Length: 344
Image (cartoon, rainbow, N blue to C red):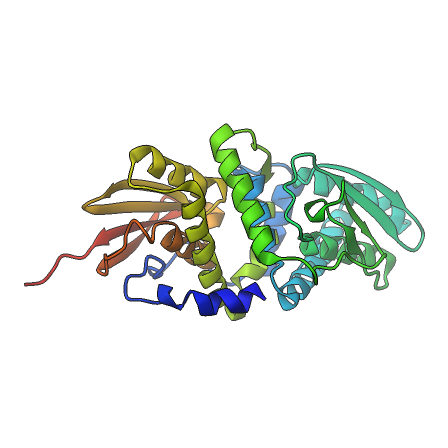
């Protein structure tokens, strides 16, 4: 699997020069508590989100969460728990007589999350939900384990018995729409992770050039769906994967020290919700990466720094004395990268 191959192949990234070294005390605590997730759900339901991210950011996060069977299983379980919470939130203000009455609220939530137009059929023992997103990039793999788990948890809570829902078809895996039913899920066994990564890179680079991929999703939903990326058992491997993908982006973009090229790198990190990047200068080195509110969670900052490490690795080749300095800034977090002064 890519998770194993690329970690081994990219051992060279573990040298002294490390952009991804994490400064201390980020603004948002690492531990996701029920109250935190409850607030995220309410932000999506009430449509009072102050911040939105590009839909490609969710594609990137969902793809990372789909690289191994264990991660897909963890993502499904996480979505199941969030689905249960979602049903209980709606039930506080509504008294459903039959579980079927709750499905329209589930559909409203999925649409508010920016997942596209939703169609559904509801039956006494199950549901069939279809997502239509015309701008969905074809990645060659199914990536919606979180959504499948969320639907399962919601329906199971309403029916008072376990109802496993799977993504039987995924538009990212070659179908016209995403379909969630009790049918067997679309398998990723024959899928190529390398192909999925290259397709996502192609779509993101094209979006940077033509500016047409402007679909937005609430930041709260992005953080809910991305939470499994922040688990300790995956963070080390994912930092290596993110660094590798950053390097692949640099190759695809033909990144150079030219100002126009560097501005492309700045737009890319924002497109993927990996911080707001400002490259003031490479000589002397002066780079800033800023995270607002929810995005300033420690693990998210670490993953973003790993991606930046790969993205800029060729431009920073030979610089072994880089220092990262972190500081809180009006509800967010800012990282500054500079060269240490040589002691004589």
